[in-house]
Image 1 (cartoon, one colour):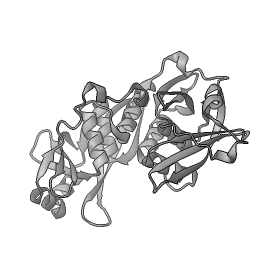
Image 2 (cartoon, rainbow, N blue to C red):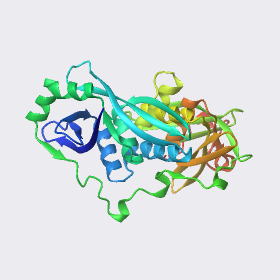
Image 3 (cartoon, rainbow, N blue to C red):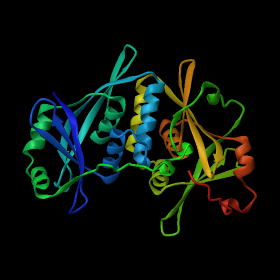
Image 4 (tube, rainbow, N blue to C red):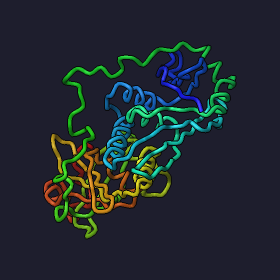
Length: 327
């Protein structure tokens, strides 16, 4: 295996193609990985210790969960690659090596998820020799790298103070007393996901099991479609699936998702995790909490007082009175 470092995250000037480059720590070879815009920005955000955009918030959540279960990422290894269907680029697979006390396990994921986690956990990044050789011998990759003009994604996340994400949009570890939700919640299930107004507005509608209250939560397109796919058993988002795999690998469970309150027109939620008689929680976006709970088959709760103020009684027009409250 070859120890590497992240050499750069770049974007081409011609066609807005994004590229992450890993370089041998002791050597001259490089591995060029073409990624989606959001993936490149999330990796760049992780390198600058910022939290911005949907993917970077998920990686930040993953980082906090790993800390919460007292696990450690010992290394990540980019272990395999294959040509995509269009033959225009390589797709890379990685293994994340996790230590939970005396227990060790690995989980497989796409390489961009692994690299972001490695940055946040300060874990070393290795590449199998065969993968490095294939990357350096791939003519299409080398042609793209050589023919296009590239710009560094530098100063991408320089915020002015007033532009920093608000605390309600950030992930954070919960105090022990904040994870005690017993007697405060009403169990909900996802009733449906609506996409309206030229696919611009998206709302996830939760309903209690007694079918007395609806709780509509407006959210971004990516999260809404992920939830829609989950309730129809179509697909699972890779990053949330990785979170659940790591939790399960550390002999822990996702105990519940809890939608707690609404502040400044933004819903707040928590994910509660358990391991034996111990538990911990992380505050996160309701979309991340709902997606994770659906993948883990964990219950979803909302605070009773929140349903009283923001919920819609079943008798009132059957979900037609939706309130525009954001994630």
